[in-house]
Length: 315
Image 1 (cartoon, helix red, strand yellow):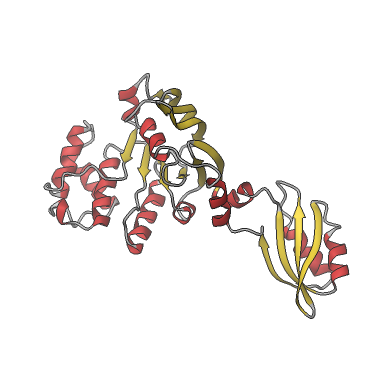
Image 2: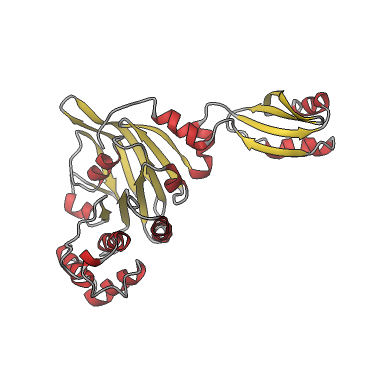
């Protein structure tokens, strides 16, 4: 659906984006993650045609943004970090205005009503936008992005400034959009992205530094392949059994937890998943596993380590 190839953006001597490439499949919800100033908004502005790239290409559903800008933009609904709202209009009049501005071909009344129901605005159509809470203003921004049913929805920091309840509601909305649209959702908050997206791309200082499915991100970010386990039983028997597992490269006891239990480090080959084998091995020798977790660092610690290796850049 979306192909970004060798994309770079320079402002004089400053490189905001440095030769990044990625693809987004149809119906995928992609999280675009990075610290403030990493290059997320620059990338989104190039994809949507708001600014041009210095080099590289962006193709959306077979149309290249620079070669066919009008055709490509018709396939994209965009919600920037600050929604483009006319606050002295009512919700319905604003959406009618945006409908005409986008030259949507669908029946206006029915389509605007459908979009309002989708984002939870059906009871607020006659209210002035300036009298809405920030959360509901964000919903109006979502609604304008959905007008015309574009196949691609791009959301730049859509939960900034919202309270916890509003954030949960926006998460649910983004997940529901993924059933009918391809979605790119940017944020600098790891928990926000991991709770919402199928796949995560991490960008730091204009460079793409990680690309993985959400549930695989921890192992991709970590250079180590390690389990830590608290196991009850005789250490010599436990270590002997662990070392029999084909993908285990090293096993050692790191500390005693109690008189009959110890903490063990279990290193394994890249790409392997030895959790089941470890469980079965300990079951064979009747040594219960009291605790088992992947890696020695949390996902948040790995993310901070990865993104702090580079500094600077343009948002």
